[in-house]
Length: 360
Image 1 (spheres, rainbow, N blue to C red):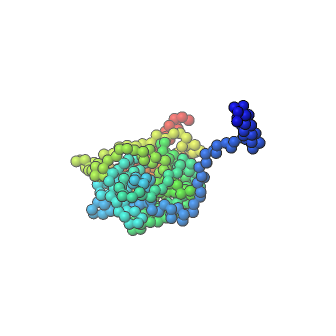
Image 2 (image 1 turned 90 degrees about the horizontal axis):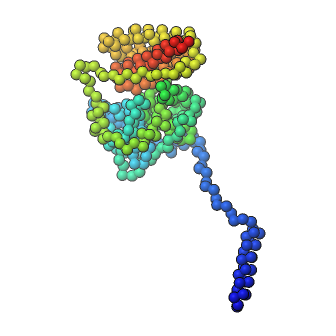
Image 3 (image 1 turned 90 degrees about the vertical axis):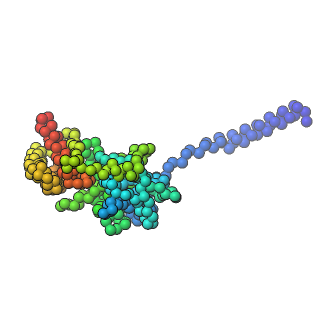
């Protein structure tokens, strides 16, 4: 075959190739990346079956007794979220898995005293089951919520309800829920209906009504990225916090600075009612505190706050503020700190009322 014939043959083949491509259309475009699957709604039963292995019983053994709480595993290597007040003190910390395995807490990764949160660490020879965190910023009143915990004398309970209110206080968010929470369930997960943890169960208030609260799960995210922390032994020593030699407990005041917006929709009559009620409570409670009866002082403050919190005729901003004050007080570990926490809440309300009056 001559060079010319080879050239003609090559040209014919190329022509046929191009023609074939043209007759069949353009080459298929590269496939676009698959969109992430939308989360699927789960029943309460599905959530329990799927995530029960990742929910743990937290035990704080003081030798003379054991304080019990709940936690949930966030990483396969053993990072667990719970409430700070569950692990506070100089006891020996351990967790109990749903299969009965007991693991000692070896490290406290991070704590958030203001929001009563802690990330603790255990070591396991095998990867541990985990729960996923949801976006608590997307939570709204009326959303479904499922609480799972370890109340006293029981290893596992489930309750469901709704997000009753999303409360704002001094820049912090608190979730009020209708799902019942029992003693010992502090630190347990609050799931949405997609099986994502959107909150941490924090407390129950039972004087006259049932108020259950949770701390939004998004506050856990920066804590999970912490590289520091301390050993469980060092943490126990630090949180033993013996009283000063004079017998007085050192108190750090945390009076919230509220924005005037919390008074939106409130009437002058409500302002006067709250102002008078708080001052009356302080007049009765402060002398009792000074005489050493901190429990009685706290009882007066607590009853006053609860009265305003459950008063449906009161404007929402003030009701929410009293509810958050009750929440913070109940997380304190003794009546001295509880009384001061309520006094801080009262002083914060009084200050914003005074500012409102001055602005009018």
